Length: 174
Image (cartoon, rainbow, N blue to C red; front, top):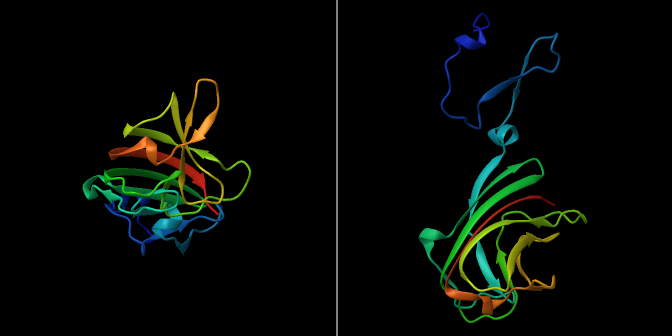
């Protein structure tokens, strides 16, 4: 196989964890075979199930299983997450709302409050709604901002039994 040009190699259709990649450490030298896993090369890809809490609890909360999912890609120390969470019952817990169960904890540096892109339905709020992954957490915090510029953390009273929320975020992990 040493006499085969790269253009003459068969195309692969999938990448497996046991595939080898030729790494050239010295362009003037000879390539050496080093094992690189798919996650080392392209990032770790996975799924998770997001949850919602009110005041840290989720008593009686129920989800539409066909519309509740999370996906992530982890490359080095940075994770990209997309999630959807659709309620069929918000339950009886009260207090500050958090989207919980993110697969990785954010790092604890001052500059690591990561804003999220958000789409939602059946959630009430005043003026503007925003979200973020705070430092050193595995949750998304939801905030409403009034026209006067004051903010308040959203809570159970903002949600209904049919609330639907989609979030996309990228953040550094701990």
